[in-house]
Amino acid sequence: MQSGLGVKAARVAIVVALFAIWEILSRTGIVNPRLLPSASDTLVTLGDLLQRASVRKDLVVTASEVATAFALAVPVGALIGFLIAENRYFAEVAKPLLFFAFSIPKSIFLPMFILVFGVGFSQKVGFGFFSTIFIVIMSTTTAVESVKVEHLTVARSYGATPMQTAFRVYLPSMLPVLLEALRISMIFNLTGVILAEMYASRDGIGHQIATWGENFQMKQLLAGVVMIAVIAIAFNELVRWVETRCSHWRT
Image (tube, rainbow, N blue to C red; front, top):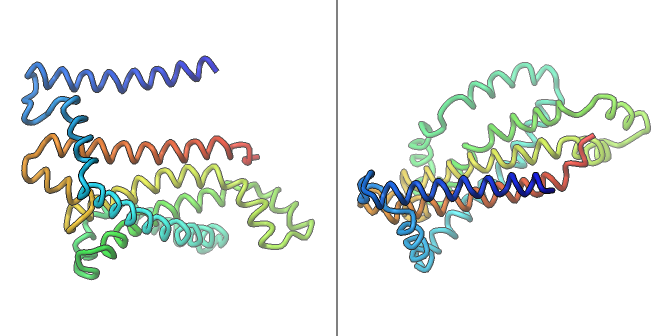
């Protein structure tokens, strides 16, 4: 318990130290304050931005796009990954192709999404889906392969139905790996949606960040970066908390 508190205290200390260094670099003029506004000024600006209705609206837009893309990519990717892992021949054929596809930078396909879907909700959701599904497929395939064969053999020998096998053998064994995959997938999903908003969009927090950058509004730009970072970290920690609660499922 004490060691856990010590680790958390060390993490907090590192974050505080980074903000202190940021503040010192700006306040002392080591870095031009126009290029790097102080941490305190950035946090004040963040508070002001969150009071603006337009910024809150853009956050809602981005959240809806991220949630929709995630809700589509995870079950579709999980189903495809499960089917690949369950068929040895198909796995040998498809897995190398998936790794090839995963290695290609997804951003080069963004103009194609704009041409096909236009500039709007479907374009950003589509690109978020595309950015996420490959990591979900690969993670699900790995999770299925992590299930012990003897557990499946015992379940089937006792006459377990495919549905019972899925929920009582596959899911408990796969859940820790899948939760880890969810954390990683959300990073790709959020990155894809923000990138799509920055590239071509009329709304969303990514569009706002791009506008602040183009207009050299560094306080607003850094405040937007901090805002996105806090949201991403909050989701990451939420999944980590669920993961610790479900860790006893792994056998």
